[in-house]
Image 1 (cartoon, rainbow, N blue to C red):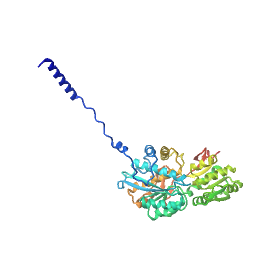
Image 2: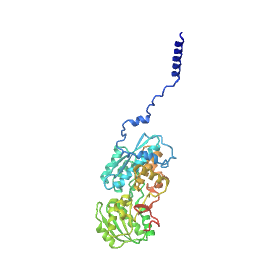
Image 3: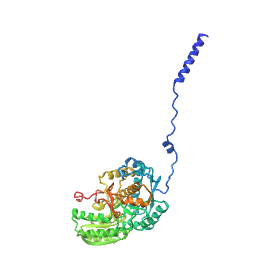
Image 4: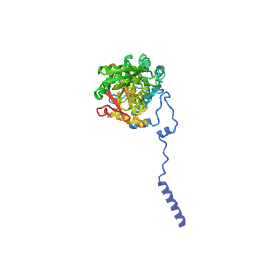
Length: 432
């Protein structure tokens, strides 16, 4: 063979060997399962449930804490893949000042419960129905979540009056109910399936009046109260607490729910020169009452019941709300670890601070989930029994127990408005 031809063959052979030894470039990775799911359009598996706000689930998972609930109890293993509870809330009309934040509190709790695996492989769904703030609306909503949605427990209704109308439906069907804001006398007496995590006015108002007497030296008052069920019930507790503390009642005036002009009643009361004005009202009327009382020259403390326990009252009354005093089940200044966790998670989810109504609804959802976990069952009777057995559970409201009569057992607080915010009433904050 010619020398040049031999050289050519050797070069070609060398190049083939080198090419065979070089690894081929890696194939492009296949889409992961999560990416593939994200690329598909999403649909709601539970159309009846109220969807979360866009950033809520992500924030809840990041800011939520596994310290809520009873993690020492065995993880459930017998629950279906989906467990449905109902929520009957006033999310339209004037009652929405309470119901909207309750809805957010429940949604946040449900997202944390599911993200944490609190119910094992099961997911909790909260079907929220609007009571419209009426008895008829509450009855329709309660009937729907129990009969159509097959809820194994219910949170709500928002107002005590609607609870009196709708809770008997749940009691008759043996479905446990937790009232997150039902404070009137007679709620739990409707039956052994009716619970509440909202402190009754009879547990809050007496301490509020005593604090007002001790810290502000109030000796006499005038009372303005509404003739709706909630306000009238609060008025009765206020009157008894005032009498027990030997506070003279100089005048009593009433109004109807929906009234907007309270000047006539306030003028009569203020003419008697009371040390304080006691108001039993819902938030919509309360804001107007405070504003008009200040416009008529009343500069003293205004003491309210649970209806005034909302930031919307402060917003409506503006500077006039300064010095308003309200008893409460919870205050945002609480440094209890689970309260701080809840505040941070709620703020992250909704870009707004929570109020007492949000805290109580959030806690109610965790209480219901805890009963479901402990019962390891969707049998409403087993859930009821587990609720009744809850004792000394750490919650944002503090150490929580249900008493033998299904009332909440945890300490109340007394608040005063300072610089546009509720703060705890102390000797320091009591001073102007």
